[in-house]
Amino acid sequence: MLLLPLFFAAPPAAGAWGAEVIHREQSLYQTILVVRRGDLLCLQFSTRQERRNQSCRDETDPNRLVFGYTRMMLAALLLNPEPERIFMAGLGGGSLVVALADLLPEATIDVVEIDPAVVDVARRFFEFQPGSRTRVIVRDARVFAKRALGEGASYDLILLDAYGGDYIPEHLMTAEFLEEIGGLLAPGGVVAANTFAHSQLYDHESVTYRQVFGPFYNLKRNDSDNRIVLAMRESLPPKELLTNNANRWRGAMRPLGVPVASYPRALTTRIDWDRDKRALTDQYSPANLLRERPR
Image (cartoon, rainbow, N blue to C red; front, side, top):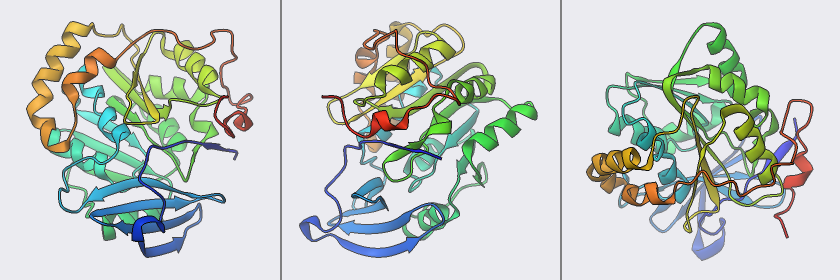
């Protein structure tokens, strides 16, 4: 499997500012580290070149979502404010799963994580304790999606956040995979994908989402190097409805540090990519294009 780099807006790597590595292990997929830096406890995956923060927990304010891209993922609730069934690809430290479980106590959540060591670390160090309505499945997200599709499962919200180190597995970026994800959406269902705000693959990836879903909302902010793609099988809801839903969620998301009221203005369907680029497929996924940022 080729590995695709992802550039996170994150605190400095371990070793800076007196950071302390309190846990290190080599899993089947990556080197996993837990690093304490001041009040932040961070999960990192070590790559050949550097370490990347996957999740951080503020021990003085555990409810606060530390990373901008994690907060931005909750913009999906502006498109569908009452999802009953949620599928999330990628666990990390579990902060987003916990936030969703608190915001949506009646929802069921299927969290799919390929690395059992990540699940163990989330439990041991980040106080991730799945409740009765949260199920953690140790499996490749694409294998899970194929099986779920064959079983006739459907979800109101699908969150794609499956990263390891600084890459996205290429088989989770193709048109074929997104078609499978689209097939799992219930009526009114939303896909929220955490992906690149800047990369050599930006045009290809955008063309792929557009080919599968049609127009989608792009969410970018200055506090993150990531973007969130928000897509549906149906027509996207108008900005007025997004604003109403943002006002509805404003109080509940305040303890998480989510500036949800500002998201409707930031969401755009504007095409800011080259429409002539080739879509990503299982036969065409040029991972080398992500080896460096665009010049």
